[in-house]
Length: 318
Ligand SMILES: [Mn+2]
Image 1 (cartoon, rainbow, N blue to C red):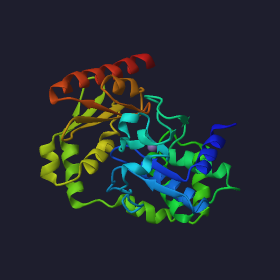
Image 2: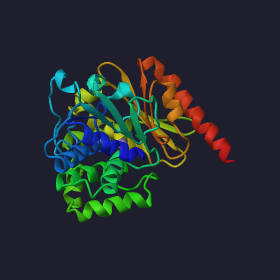
Image 3: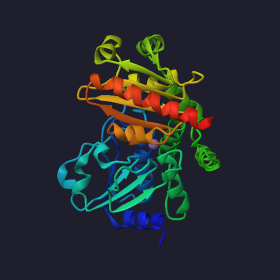
Image 4: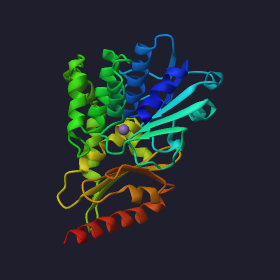
């Protein structure tokens, strides 16, 4: 039996299904969570389906998570989407569920869950969710809300179809979502809205970033800076690609101070950066990873390691 068939069987088996996502959910996390919720509800109207986790301001127009009590997890099926490591799951009560399924496209950090369906080559977890629906479309139903959520997940995780994770199937899925009535211009408008405060913050990033000798570009964002500009951490962290275009600087990062820790958003169009992220308590994709620093004193070491990574990469090209 294929893993997809096993997933469908588990969905059929359980009357209560709780869908989990990662902390600081992005478009693909929300897209996968709410896309899957709508598909299950549309297909099996008698099932109870919940989405749990944190709120995302960026894609709040998709839907918002449910607040549910602990006892609902008992006897439930938990489906965790778009999350490669269990500690990054926003609601740790998946542990209380009867059975746990992981559906993801990140490089696995730990193999949590009773059943794991991971397709690392897929551009978005939302793409995997749609393909799951598509494989069983004789038995499953979809609606416009699900299609809109899934399309948003694909469009955000691919940088609007620009990353090299985009494959012919990504466009096939997008085409099918479009035929379901998704309003791509409306989604693009919603994703493009930018406040004056964010615009001013972009000016800060562009004037303050630093560059190392061998080709690592980075910007340090303290909590005072985020407060000064009056923007959310999410809005601040989303500006990482402002410094993505400099010739000779194939690796870049935005390093931002959260209340409890300093988080590194690490990106590359050259060497794989996930191993470097692993070294600093993080992980993710080969070209897009996250890491952590316990304090700003760790920054010079991180910058040195990133610089070294680029140096070795450039040497390997010669
Ligand atoms: Mn994703």
